[in-house]
Length: 360
Image 1 (cartoon, helix red, strand yellow):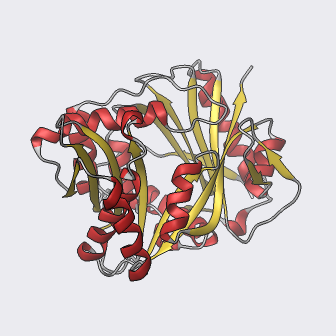
Image 2 (tube, rainbow, N blue to C red):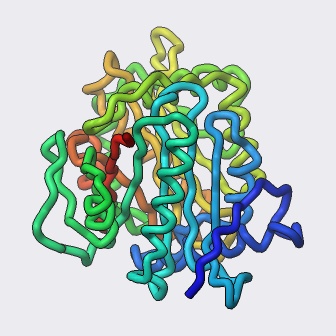
């Protein structure tokens, strides 16, 4: 097999005859890997990738597709490098995805070497990768990270370790079957309401009212500062009204729905918490993703995280009754959020590992 690496440039649509097929190839590879993780429907669509490449305001992206010269229109693997531009200017993000049937033929090594070359040429010193693994994997020995969390040494983790990466954080992947058990929901909701007096909750479907755009940006910036970071130090990640508007527009262009519930302190009118769901605008897709959940430190202890997640889940079931599964990932050291998820009925479904390598 003779491997050729084809750069994937930004395009305006997947129907672009010159380059759109590259995005379809990436989607095919991602879907096969998502199927390995238990849900092919969780894979990013080709259109979502097109939209991601069109908006490079927070990082500069480099993507490449690996093909066999004998059949150059069929993607075997792909890789990306992201270079942050708003902070963390010494870091780079990278990822390598290889079709299951094409593994152990050197594709991963070729693509990771390409990633490291791009990172070095950009003058970055630290490259970060993420490796997901399915719930059925249990490959001893376990690998310990700096926070005390552990992750199974799955094939992806073992590959990264062999290439000189070190585990920095492990996350638990969890899933929740929808709709929630009514009895569990009622019991948890009663507990949350009993502790969250003095707060009101807002649920927004796809559009955030103008007066809340800036507060939502502040919460997303706070999340970047306060989320468990494992063994990596992160710079501030600035968010403002314009960036929130771009995020919402990206979701619309990518054909993704977005549901958010926020908590407002009645006494001050301040937005103090936020939780999010996103899912494809496709009645045939049964899977949603739970993204960030945050409560500002001064407002913790009032069951706001639980109250927001329950309200958003109830809204999700009404808004998209075809959804039967929610996926989420949480750092192993984030015990409070894991406890909320377990109480709601989330069960383990594998995990992911963040690994880092200092480049010489």
